[in-house]
Length: 415
Image (cartoon, rainbow, N blue to C red):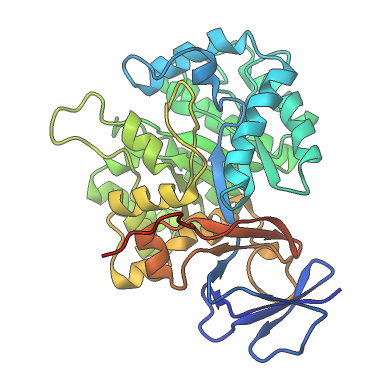
């Protein structure tokens, strides 16, 4: 059955107000399109592709509450990494699924339809990975999930970690992960970066590395990762997540590296809420923000996206899967709110994330692509961001995943 969604404000399209959907795909976009069997009035609301969360840890969500805590004592990255193994011993496939489902519902109910999750594979039993592989298949009608084989305790810091990553790739993980700044010495961090790229090439997998998530400007594993993917022509399939130390690098080094990032086409992911919370812990004042150079990346045409990262886990006590909240925090911290910047700010949680996931060919509001989109409770990009509006509806393959009413009052405010 053909459906026409009309009276819409379509993101990044100043002329079209209507879309026709048939067999789950967009067949027409424009104005004054032919009548269809079903016609749905979007009441002038802003329509955009579904939110993308390109960096989440679904095996960690809500584990902080399960531990009976409200936060780590020091609030540092490394304390959280030390806390995690104690809890990991208690995991079962069922417990991972139970908590992960809460996190997925948080995100999907707020407009996310694409998630990349890092799953800790420094576990010889692969408990979390087995759970997530099952959930990826079981929930594909609701959300697309990519799985990163992530050695949370290190490829070399954890005995046999590198081999566990390789086994996870054989089991079906979509991407190779790593954490070179956590390895016991720079030599082993560098070795892990070489391993990551070699494994990706061997198994034809994507790359997503927790890279330089530290305030230390001498942590420069990003430089090595970029060099290797540049030489292999693999940059567009690779992502550097966090890269907090690059925000502390001097300008001479940073701008030289950005020229190389443009050549390699490496993608970046910044986690504004989490890294603002974790980083700068040893600073007095001035205190660093924990962000990589988001503004400079955008100005240079380097792909960068925002992500949630954590929901109520030992690393971050907050988080609720609301990508509008992530965007709001990120554009404040990165200082990207000029009139021209606001026009494309939503790219940071939509199109740019899709590029990190390498799904851009099938993603977006264009003829021939799957009819996946969300409807926001405003008519303009500026007002939607300013008011941090809710998602009124999420449509997948032309069918509603959910639809909610605007806020109604029993007693309204009268002035």
